[in-house]
Length: 395
Image (cartoon, rainbow, N blue to C red; front, side, top):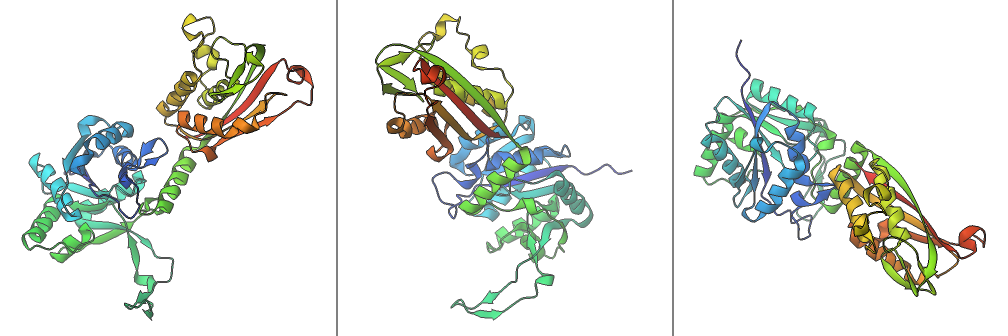
């Protein structure tokens, strides 16, 4: 029985993603707790048959690639990065040359994948490998659901192609290594740079290209709306957890209270071992609740003198980092401050901004509300302030 051929993957990640816009190339934009590229590496890395994953990067992106590789969780021994070229073809050729440099065999299978398609599932990877072995060149495709139109240069309809014969082409595309390397080298020698994908290169030099079933989750991130779709897909795939927090502090003598990281003038202060900020304390407990990791007191015991007078943003940053370390992305936080005084309204926006700064959230994902207890209970008697908080985290 012949042994299965070795398999490698090339991820093309050297582009600038100009259509998406922004200062950060799209492959390094975040989807939850990971970058787009990190998700692509992580998914390819789940298939043990893939021995090496070569990522072709822009020469300026080495630090961003290193972070993405770390986020992926794939063992570093399987990962290689090489600088790309001016065009996609140049970059793919750089990846192929890197494999040739480690004597990757001509009959081995190489999967060539776009970093902008992060959700490459195990099933489609295995279909790609099988198609590469049996056909030598193969592409993942999906039926086209929409009616297609061919327009003239003025944008007027010329004809409607038969969509029954049309397919949307995805990556990873699979090839025998010797076949696709030879095709790319011939294209380079002839100065051809008009190909939109590697299947086109193979077909141009006489290699029939087979097809296999793709995956709707393999959509390409090109526009901002695609990134939002990717975030929703990632959140839905991992699930969302909610945590609740509650904190109380009594009044003592003083001239201000700390709420949401903001000093609010008042006729009294709040009593506590730290700066006694019940808003940040409640949000900290809510975040800890999403990962089942105790409460603020178990992480920062009030008996420990090092926390005396400490700013509570330290506690919230700690909870944030724990959530991120577990692979979580904070979706939003919301809190309700219960007190008769001081008035919260004039300071609400500043609290939202400060909490957002600590957690890396836009203000629209930070809720700060206030209510009284209609003069009932300890808050109604103006003996202290209570805060309830809820946090939502996607995993």
